[in-house]
Image (cartoon, rainbow, N blue to C red):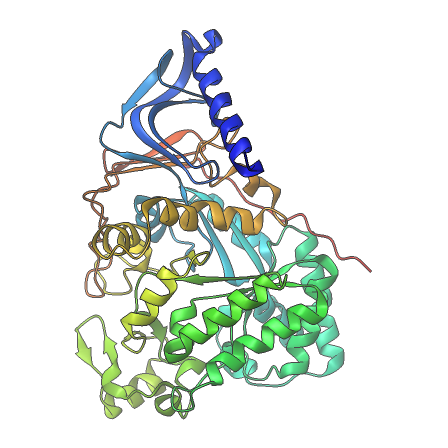
Amino acid sequence: MPLKNRVAACLLASASILYAQPALANTVCDLVVSKGRVMDPASGRDEVTDLCVTNGKITAIAKSGLSGKRTINAAGHVVSPGFIDIHVHLTDDYSLSYLVRDGVTTALELEGGAYPLKPYYDQLARSAYMNYGASVSYAGARLAVQTGSTEGGRNRPGAEALGRQSISEEQQAQVNTLIESGLSEGGIGIGLGIEYIRGADQSEVYRLFKTAGRSKAIAFVHTREFTSADRGNMLNAVLEVMADAAATGAGVHICHVSSKGLGDTPIILEAIRDAKARGLDVSVEVPSYADAAGVIGSGLFDDGWQKRWNADYSSLELPSTGQRLTKEVFDDLRANRPQTRIQKHITPEWTVDAGMAEPGVIIASDAVRMDPGLSGDPRGSGTFSRTLGRYVRERKLLSLMDAIRRMALLPAQRLERMAPAMARKGRLQVGADADITIFDADKVIDQGTALTPAVAPLGIPFVIVNGQVVVDNGQLVSGTRPGRPILGTLRPVR
């Protein structure tokens, strides 16, 4: 018998012994999740059984013999590890309340990051529906060196203009010293939005990767600007950071491959696949929506954006009214209301399909703030339910187990070297943290739109974070804040 078959047989035998253990008889749990289809992507377990949760951990898995202070009847539902969203831009209570109802039990700001870190963690502690954490923001540290101040972080007024300025090698060294300090303080890797830092040339980015390499940190990268009119430039932007990673020993994660890759998405996925096969520490993510939000005053809309994207003003929508923009409206907003959010109808749907169909691609939201009664981007309320409803059930582009793997296990595994707490997440196993999402595979679907983004999805009745029920029969449990900070443990190696 081949080795892998012998190992599988041993695992199945061990599971049978576990179910037969008399020690499980009359086990009293804080919470029992009963009669659900338990799907654990780490072991491949896919069966109807019960889970015992005690003190925030999964303490037993058995078909009988469990009783609890509370029992959730999950019959007819999938019991999954809670979803881990590694790409959010949310700190407010209102938006996070919708993210958790989409099954997210850990939400991390890794693309943009935060600098300094403490204010970010302090703010999230007050809205801790789910676990939370951030990378160290290169843009934020760079602004701190340019201005001598950390007030306002990377999104302060004037940040766009300062990002367009080049900085000296001495200043770059100062920025990288701040990055190393942030890693030592608990930052989960480094957030690098190159397109938003137009003044950063290739040498500056390379020096940042050298800093990441000394700690074996991962850089979470929004790649350099691209052009749809000149096919191949999008691939070049990805090859730049993969070459930097290969030369320095850093890890690299490519954010939202579909919206950055556009027509080059298939060749970018091929290049990442080839690089991984040769041992490069690289990963990639895709959102489940093609359309995305943008801020009209950002560098995304600098002169030449139409050529870069092969788009025009009508490709942009003011979500508050559904109005497609004209040159006059665009110019007025950019000059007088630069913080206005718009929806970009630029990414072809088939590029999302390509990312969904590619094995090993992590699913992440890129969720931005939603405000009560206002229009915006529905990614924060529907990315994961949309994946399960549209891409698994309706389109059949990936299996249910693979979707759970890519929404829970793969992000946990990607981060656990930097943040050891992630080794207990993304799994339904004895000893794992009790972060659990329960959904109806036949009904789950997103409901938000750009006009009304703040609408909870259908088919996710229960979400459990660290053993506490946060979403109960589809309703947010008032006053429950069981989320915990996720901190990195990296230290620079000189």
